[in-house]
Length: 429
Image 1 (tube, one colour):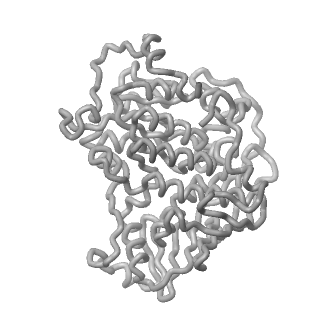
Image 2 (cartoon, helix red, strand yellow):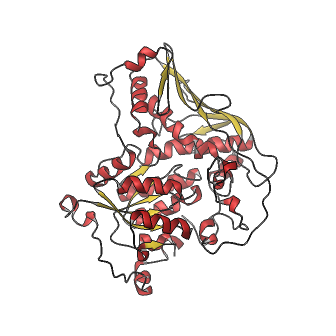
Image 3 (cartoon, helix red, strand yellow):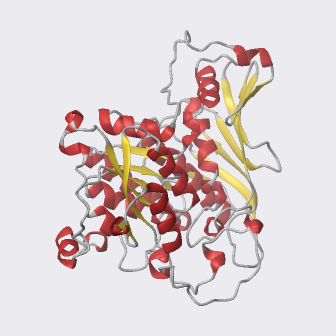
């Protein structure tokens, strides 16, 4: 039996863990639009800073109610439980227990990258709608498996690339689509560089952390807080972002997927019309625990001659620059242009319209209610993430590759080995 499904609802109920005194919350899906409160009940999996931020946005939405939380870190778990006013019996260490609840409509997944697909796929199979933080997946084949699962299920999916819900980004991408700056053949993306650190000796596992469940499908490694915590030396980012056990492409996907998504949105590039060649050069740490990319430059080439260049911010400002044959536009929450008069361009009357969302979590809740597609649905999520992961493979192997966007494979056997990885048992797709 698949390990993801081995914790059945029947076993959970027999365990007594579900015998809670609090009244059962009836999920909105049992009533559709005629629900008594028409609220979407939400479970949160992963309650670090990113999970807390998303959770608070759900709490503030009048049509959402956070009813359960889950984390392998008991300190994070209880802090989230207090914020959401979730009682102890609905605070879980194991996400499978949360997914076994019938009173949850949707889940927020804000765990490390190596957990995203396993947890999102399990949630989809449990009948939940899913809001999953970026990047969608840790490997390209994982992402494809989740795409297939979402399409098969018909569940609502939202990717946490929330830059699409920015007014400025929406305006710039709309102007690009309408050729306000002329024909755009090249886009430049600037993404923060990775980080390096020294060696960190093993330490005893703290009693508030389920280290085995944190590792999950990743190789079992000796414990050190430098595998999961945040430090001023990591710019207050989680350390696992820079360790390939948990983040295969490092910051190229972990951060770059936001900007890649905007570039593709502005260009109007579809899933099927992907690049046909990818090449890049980068610098990796020479030693120490962190082993993902530091500085880099990657170029994606399309058959029609369009190009996207992704670099670290030492070479290009953080954000997305669309180079038209008349002018250029730049965005990442704010806007800039070669001719700043362009920034006053009214877009309401432009012929090409783009999906508009004013708040990402709100868009998800509204789509859970209406059953309409979100602003960053599963195909959009996989398109942006897969290109960043492909870039990570090219950088690691340090050579140019031909890429087939339909089969999602390289013209190189060694590169194709990196499209997936062997998960540590009992975890599997």
